[in-house]
Length: 147
Image (tube, rainbow, N blue to C red):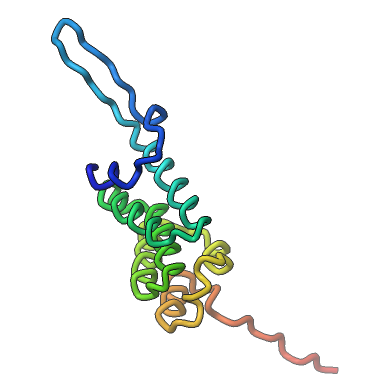
Protein backbone atom coordinates (compact mmCIF):
# COMPACT_ATOMS: atom_id res chain seq x y z
CA UNK A 1 0.00 0.00 0.00
CA UNK A 2 2.90 2.34 0.75
CA UNK A 3 4.31 1.69 -2.74
CA UNK A 4 0.95 2.50 -4.29
CA UNK A 5 0.35 5.63 -2.25
CA UNK A 6 3.74 7.04 -3.24
CA UNK A 7 2.78 6.74 -6.92
CA UNK A 8 -0.62 8.34 -6.38
CA UNK A 9 0.47 11.73 -5.12
CA UNK A 10 -2.13 13.60 -7.21
CA UNK A 11 -5.14 11.45 -6.32
CA UNK A 12 -7.93 12.68 -4.06
CA UNK A 13 -8.26 9.87 -1.52
CA UNK A 14 -11.42 11.37 -0.02
CA UNK A 15 -13.36 9.29 -2.57
CA UNK A 16 -11.68 6.11 -1.38
CA UNK A 17 -11.04 6.45 2.35
CA UNK A 18 -13.60 7.02 5.09
CA UNK A 19 -12.19 8.46 8.30
CA UNK A 20 -13.99 8.00 11.62
CA UNK A 21 -12.84 9.27 15.00
CA UNK A 22 -13.59 7.43 18.23
CA UNK A 23 -13.12 10.23 20.76
CA UNK A 24 -13.78 7.97 23.74
CA UNK A 25 -10.89 5.69 22.76
CA UNK A 26 -8.79 8.44 21.20
CA UNK A 27 -8.61 6.46 17.96
CA UNK A 28 -8.88 7.27 14.28
CA UNK A 29 -10.12 4.58 11.93
CA UNK A 30 -9.54 4.60 8.19
CA UNK A 31 -11.71 2.37 6.04
CA UNK A 32 -10.52 1.88 2.48
CA UNK A 33 -13.02 1.01 -0.22
CA UNK A 34 -10.77 -1.30 -2.24
CA UNK A 35 -13.08 -1.45 -5.26
CA UNK A 36 -13.03 2.33 -5.53
CA UNK A 37 -9.28 2.39 -4.95
CA UNK A 38 -8.73 -0.08 -7.79
CA UNK A 39 -10.89 2.05 -10.08
CA UNK A 40 -9.02 5.23 -9.12
CA UNK A 41 -5.71 3.51 -9.87
CA UNK A 42 -6.86 2.26 -13.29
CA UNK A 43 -8.27 5.67 -14.24
CA UNK A 44 -5.06 7.40 -13.13
CA UNK A 45 -2.91 4.88 -15.02
CA UNK A 46 -4.97 5.36 -18.18
CA UNK A 47 -4.59 9.12 -17.83
CA UNK A 48 -0.82 8.66 -17.64
CA UNK A 49 -0.86 6.46 -20.74
CA UNK A 50 -2.92 9.13 -22.50
CA UNK A 51 -0.13 11.59 -21.66
CA UNK A 52 2.46 9.13 -23.02
CA UNK A 53 3.79 8.58 -19.49
CA UNK A 54 3.70 4.84 -20.03
CA UNK A 55 6.47 3.88 -17.61
CA UNK A 56 4.76 5.92 -14.87
CA UNK A 57 1.51 4.11 -15.65
CA UNK A 58 3.28 0.75 -15.53
CA UNK A 59 4.87 1.62 -12.17
CA UNK A 60 1.48 2.55 -10.74
CA UNK A 61 -0.21 -0.58 -12.08
CA UNK A 62 2.60 -2.83 -10.88
CA UNK A 63 2.12 -1.44 -7.37
CA UNK A 64 -1.63 -2.05 -7.74
CA UNK A 65 -0.99 -5.60 -8.90
CA UNK A 66 0.69 -6.31 -5.56
CA UNK A 67 -2.29 -4.85 -3.71
CA UNK A 68 -4.88 -6.58 -5.93
CA UNK A 69 -3.30 -9.91 -6.99
CA UNK A 70 -5.14 -11.68 -9.77
CA UNK A 71 -7.19 -8.61 -10.72
CA UNK A 72 -7.57 -9.00 -14.48
CA UNK A 73 -8.41 -5.34 -15.06
CA UNK A 74 -5.16 -4.23 -13.41
CA UNK A 75 -3.22 -6.91 -15.32
CA UNK A 76 -4.78 -5.98 -18.66
CA UNK A 77 -3.97 -2.31 -18.16
CA UNK A 78 -0.45 -3.22 -17.07
CA UNK A 79 -0.10 -5.20 -20.32
CA UNK A 80 -1.14 -2.07 -22.21
CA UNK A 81 1.34 0.14 -20.33
CA UNK A 82 4.15 -2.33 -20.94
CA UNK A 83 3.27 -2.66 -24.63
CA UNK A 84 3.26 1.12 -25.04
CA UNK A 85 6.64 1.25 -23.28
CA UNK A 86 8.14 -1.28 -25.69
CA UNK A 87 8.34 -3.97 -23.01
CA UNK A 88 6.83 -6.66 -25.23
CA UNK A 89 7.81 -9.71 -23.15
CA UNK A 90 6.40 -8.16 -19.96
CA UNK A 91 3.25 -7.09 -21.82
CA UNK A 92 2.65 -10.62 -23.06
CA UNK A 93 3.05 -12.07 -19.56
CA UNK A 94 0.47 -9.60 -18.19
CA UNK A 95 -1.92 -10.09 -21.10
CA UNK A 96 -1.84 -13.84 -20.57
CA UNK A 97 -2.31 -13.41 -16.81
CA UNK A 98 -5.28 -11.10 -17.33
CA UNK A 99 -6.99 -13.63 -19.59
CA UNK A 100 -6.22 -16.50 -17.21
CA UNK A 101 -7.76 -14.48 -14.36
CA UNK A 102 -10.97 -13.80 -16.27
CA UNK A 103 -10.52 -11.02 -18.82
CA UNK A 104 -12.76 -12.07 -21.71
CA UNK A 105 -13.19 -9.03 -23.95
CA UNK A 106 -11.77 -10.67 -27.09
CA UNK A 107 -12.82 -7.75 -29.28
CA UNK A 108 -10.91 -5.31 -27.11
CA UNK A 109 -7.80 -7.50 -27.04
CA UNK A 110 -7.82 -7.84 -30.83
CA UNK A 111 -8.47 -4.15 -31.54
CA UNK A 112 -6.84 -2.27 -28.67
CA UNK A 113 -4.36 0.23 -30.13
CA UNK A 114 -2.30 -0.05 -26.95
CA UNK A 115 -1.47 -3.66 -27.85
CA UNK A 116 -0.54 -3.12 -31.50
CA UNK A 117 3.15 -3.83 -30.80
CA UNK A 118 2.23 -7.35 -29.67
CA UNK A 119 0.18 -8.52 -32.62
CA UNK A 120 3.08 -9.73 -34.76
CA UNK A 121 4.62 -11.66 -31.89
CA UNK A 122 4.38 -15.47 -32.01
CA UNK A 123 3.68 -15.54 -28.24
CA UNK A 124 0.69 -13.19 -28.75
CA UNK A 125 -0.69 -15.52 -31.40
CA UNK A 126 -0.19 -18.50 -29.06
CA UNK A 127 -2.05 -16.71 -26.25
CA UNK A 128 -4.97 -15.88 -28.53
CA UNK A 129 -5.06 -19.42 -29.98
CA UNK A 130 -5.00 -21.01 -26.51
CA UNK A 131 -7.62 -18.80 -24.89
CA UNK A 132 -9.82 -17.95 -27.89
CA UNK A 133 -9.43 -20.83 -30.38
CA UNK A 134 -12.41 -19.73 -32.46
CA UNK A 135 -10.72 -16.39 -33.14
CA UNK A 136 -7.44 -18.01 -34.11
CA UNK A 137 -9.01 -20.39 -36.61
CA UNK A 138 -9.49 -18.93 -40.08
CA UNK A 139 -13.03 -19.31 -41.41
CA UNK A 140 -13.60 -22.30 -43.64
CA UNK A 141 -14.68 -21.43 -47.17
CA UNK A 142 -17.88 -23.15 -48.23
CA UNK A 143 -17.43 -25.91 -50.79
CA UNK A 144 -17.97 -24.89 -54.40
CA UNK A 145 -21.54 -25.17 -55.61
CA UNK A 146 -22.23 -28.26 -57.68
CA UNK A 147 -24.53 -27.75 -60.65
